[in-house]
Length: 485
Ligand SMILES: NC(=O)c1ccc[n+]([C@@H]2O[C@H](COP(=O)([O-])OP(=O)(O)OC[C@H]3O[C@@H](n4cnc5c(N)ncnc54)[C@H](O)[C@@H]3O)[C@@H](O)[C@H]2O)c1
Ligand SMILES: O=CCc1c[nH]cn1
Image (cartoon, rainbow, N blue to C red; front, side, top):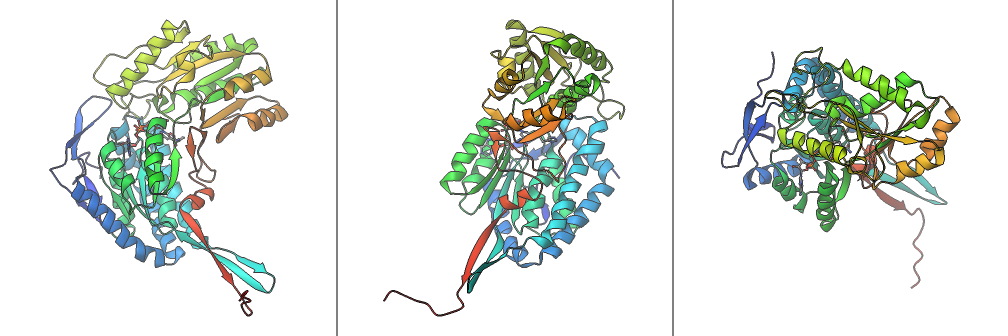
């Protein structure tokens, strides 16, 4: 069948596509060519109001349904997503520029995993019985109410599902606002959920940039906000949510360390560094962009890395043999080019890449800097593009201290054949999502999220249930009440 990149309308609210052409025009640009592939409108106050009122109305009934019934709908949506994986992957590629060699295996499939996993859990979200001598108590797990999801542009389908699936499983409604850069995929998630039987109003998608997000976060009828985005946005959204004492999940940025010891399997370590720096053209929050390599193997590591980067197939992301696509936008590419210039100016050694690739799309070469020192800007700030910084180390305690010397704490990885060292080092690294002899795996069964400035709360796994529900405690007295007077 194939999806049209121009959706029927900009927003999906109360079970149907709706439009309000008085909202500012948003042009959707295909990163591989620079062509405009859709025109949408930002949500107006009227659209925002409809999303909130329909969400609240629908949530009250949804919360009263049995968990297994809610779960059945989510699992049906997962099946539909898997059936439509090809078309969803083509759309994801148009939205983001990520190559089909990735989107076919990661995006809708990861979204379907979340729907399936939380659909499976929905029937088991119970409280507990607490014996209290002659009396007893019990807890009831209740939904939070109306949740708002705010998405980043790197994984539009995955983010829409990672937030929507646990929210709905717990009996909440969700209004999801995708990134203004990649607004197309979440509309398909909403369509599929409703096709699977989700009652109207429970998963509304509305479009817009920061202003629309701000209006949602500031509305007193919203009970929870889950943001995937940058640290500066996270600080603003967290502060605004705090005004209304709303629940929050913050999935923010990082500058994560990947430590390669001298006994590591070299090709596996190089593979991990490639996955942690160049997958999705480097636009992954958890990327291990500070690669600490033991001095004794540094040159061998760099040689093998340069060889393997030489075989990257850069090009049309719709060609399934291509494995490195464009950046999401020209402005993001400019940010990355600016960092590359800073790396050169600060005296880092450019091992490979460093330039744009001529043409209409937003391509840039996979770039590796060596001899990077801790104080350089490219070792301190999140670049969110295909730029790897390789730093030397010789001592375990020293590299742990240097790896932790950052305000971020999203991810960390270690490559070594010494299993004791692997666990000892990971145990001391300050990060929420860690990897041993691997990098960037994000299965739905494991919690995902950061510490320090990288975030609050966790997505995925049973832990996410804690972030989309709350417990009511009930004390039951079996005898008479003894009052003092
Ligand atoms: N930890 C994670 O899971 C994760 C995953 C993907 C991306 N990220 C991070 O996201 C960033 C890149 O994405 P981005 O550029 O889209 O992030 P961003 O912070 O610019 O925007 C994120 C979302 O917040 C919205 N927004 C912006 N200002 C707002 C405000 N004041 N109130 C409410 N909403 C507002 C945007 O419209 C967008 O939908 C990187 O820092 C990356 O590390 C984190
Ligand atoms: O971009 C961050 C979320 C993520 C990590 N791996 C896959 N998705």
